[in-house]
Structure formats: structure tokens, C-alpha cells
Length: 164
Image (cartoon, rainbow, N blue to C red; front, side):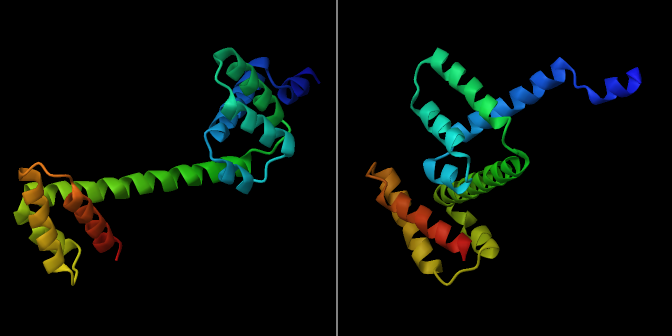
């Protein structure tokens, strides 16, 4: 009988860990935009607490508000919420990697114009002449210390080619 009771009870340490997980999830929610928060369809009191947290600047007040959000999260099933936030984090990571790839190609094409054949073999396009002209203008712009107009144009062009 005593062993069955021990199996069903949760230790204080386990309860604290679960509360900390919920509190950290609540803090992740505080980093989201209002439109994403609305998309999550949160309970009104949790939604308002998160909006209030976003406006707080004092460290002590932030700590108390995060504890309050953690308390509100106990009454909310967070498994689906975790899945959604993980998905959004993965999407954001993919977007950053995509941006980084475009930026690396832009830099490589300007610094090593011979890499154009490598780029075109990987991303075939009909806009080869436009790309070559834009690279040439970007290099001239760089040597003359002009505003980076063609540098931006090259970035947009590379992005367009990669996304085709």
C-alpha cells in the first residue's frame, strides 16, 4: 500500500522542475509578436499577462510577472503550444540559413568573380547577363567607395535566382 502511494505522488523537486519549464515557456511566449500570440488562441488572462510582461522594464517586476505567467500556464495544456513554438523556431532558423546562403554567395561573387560558373551550375538562370553586369557594377562601386546600391541589387537578384 505504501509503495503504491509513493508511485502516485510527485516529488517537490519534480513539481518545481515542471513549474520552471512552464515559466520558461511563458517567457518564450513573451518574445512573440502580438499577431503570433493571437494565432495561438491563448486564454484571455494569460494573453493579457504576456502583453503586460512585454511592457515591463523593471527586473523585479519582470521576475514577479514571469512567475505569474508560470502560474497561469499550469492551467493550460502546453503540449500543443510547445509543438507550435518549436515549428516557428525551426522556420526562423531556416530563414536565417537562407539569408546566410544568399549573403555568402553575394560576397563570394564580388570577391571571386570566377565563382560565377559555380553559382550558375548550381542555380541555372536565364538572367546570366544581368547577373554579370550587376556583379561588375558592384565591384566598381566597391572600388570607388560609393553607396552600396548595386550591392543591394546583387543581393536581390541572387535571392530571386536561388528561390526560382
